Amino acid sequence: MGYRLGGRYIEGLEHLGSGLAFAEKLSGGLRGARVFSDLTPEEATLLAGFLDVFRVKNGAAFIFEGDDGSFMVVVLSGQVNVFKQFDGPNPKLVASVGTGKTLGEMSMIDGEPRFATCIAAEDTTFAMLDRKGFLQIMEQRPALASKILLHLVVLLNQRLRQASAKLLEVMESGERSARRLQQPA
Amino acid sequence: MGYRLGGRYIEGLEHLGSGLAFAEKLSGGLRGARVFSDLTPEEATLLAGFLDVFRVKNGAAFIFEGDDGSFMVVVLSGQVNVFKQFDGPNPKLVASVGTGKTLGEMSMIDGEPRFATCIAAEDTTFAMLDRKGFLQIMEQRPALASKILLHLVVLLNQRLRQASAKLLEVMESGERSARRLQQPA
Image (cartoon, rainbow over all chains, first blue to last red; front, side, top):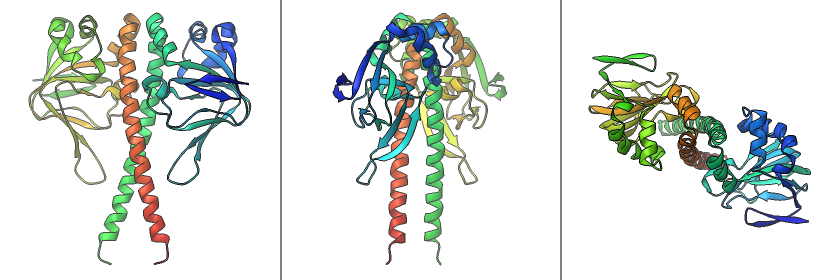
């Protein structure tokens, strides 16, 4: 059992069908995700029509660090571990996310390389939105698109502020250490 | 001469009028800004109707670090210096921006405190969009709103990737220094 997603054949991935087929059921799951949290039930049902639903087996990777990204997922059930390659020989676990979390939204929008690798930590179902689907939403349902994008902007703003604050902190503490080292003993 | 903007009375600020009054003229200036660069001339003219245009005197501050933000500006002519308060006693110049650059878009969207202070480095004109105006665009012109938001997402993504890469770099070099210090001489 396998399926092609994001230009790769992924062993352990099963396509359950278009979101259209179970729009009603999906609506609640989507609205549990922060990016979609202020959609009305009607909007979430509309959105579902642009998605595909997958099941992935425990242990299977379905997003790969460095790949050109073209889709995002919303975890509907299960658990996903996120690994990033640093200096050392082995990737490090940087996050573990469950139901209602989204993954890959940055690359879905801008197509830049994936920041990390995502591996199912148990049997997991997710809804998938790709760039093509998102551009269709922008064209056919611009009010829905702008609501989703506004949420993405707020989310990215928060992450950027956190990263900037952390960067300032690390750099300032580095400068302080350097100054201490430069002072005559 | 002064005017109230973002909850402050700003000496040296002059309100030239609603963007509606000079929509045709504004259209080109707006499309020179990256966030608005893929708007059609018609869309830029539409957008202009939601903006206000200001002139600010050389030396006047019009965005203040720490303030709750509610508007963004597009520089139409002139130059703006951006200062941020760090550890030391005086704010540091972190950027100097001219025609076609945008300032304050993050806080316009999420209302979080301003990251830095903006001071006109010469007599400067700018177009201003506040959150109220932006929410009106979302309601009345969702296709226009989603185009602008998509650009903001791409821009924020880039900044976030840069900040994350820089953070990793600084942290890894910090770890290497720490390891060197821990090694027996």
